[in-house]
Length: 158
Image 1 (cartoon, one colour):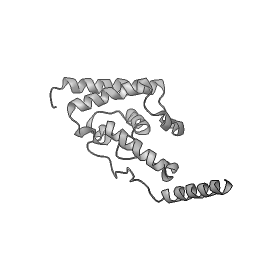
Image 2 (cartoon, one colour):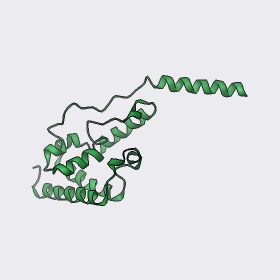
Image 3 (cartoon, rainbow, N blue to C red):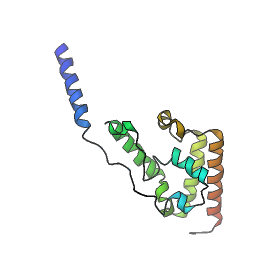
Image 4 (cartoon, rainbow, N blue to C red):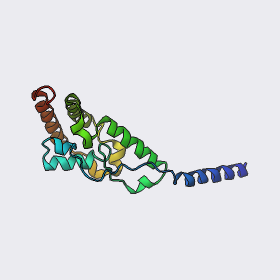
């Protein structure tokens, strides 16, 4: 029995070691896109900083990777999270969206923040500076709702 546990432990340790050589691609676009949210809409500097600090790691084409992102299987978990975040809303490609998707995305930002769904608790546990206090949530919501309203009033396809 002890020998079986020892062999199982060695196999697990070997698998963990080998897994370190299998890393997903990094989400590291070189420069800000002309289609980025802050290039497409009027975004005050304070708000742009809030969004970049609390949202952009998972919802843009450039992620600031923490030290633990080099450890498999955590690297795979982060990769999956980032891909899902970009699929839901990618701020780096916001200007490429159809107008109705822009409006929906902006409306969704406030809903997710107010519900406490975003930023993810798993993200803010480690990235404490990404937590949004009530004032920051209000700033983001007021801005996103105002911008969605402007887009709605601007007519079809503008």
